[in-house]
Length: 76
Image (cartoon, rainbow, N blue to C red):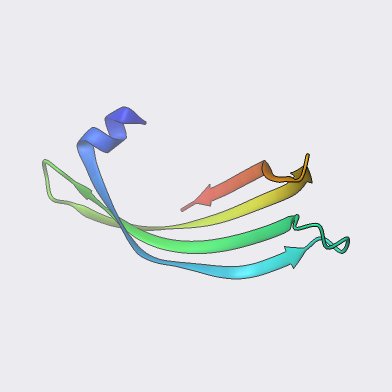
């Protein structure tokens, strides 16, 4: 991952919350989905590549604290 960061810069174009599910027990847990669009620019060649990312996060309450229990990212 460090090599990718040294070779490219990344700029977020948008990041939208597309779906939310709140746990029915009302304790604050649940799931959220974000769809983001970004561009990557090669620092040497200047080549720009557009991409997208779908991120799904699952949160549970443990000891009265929100804890991220699962994170899934699908990058195109």
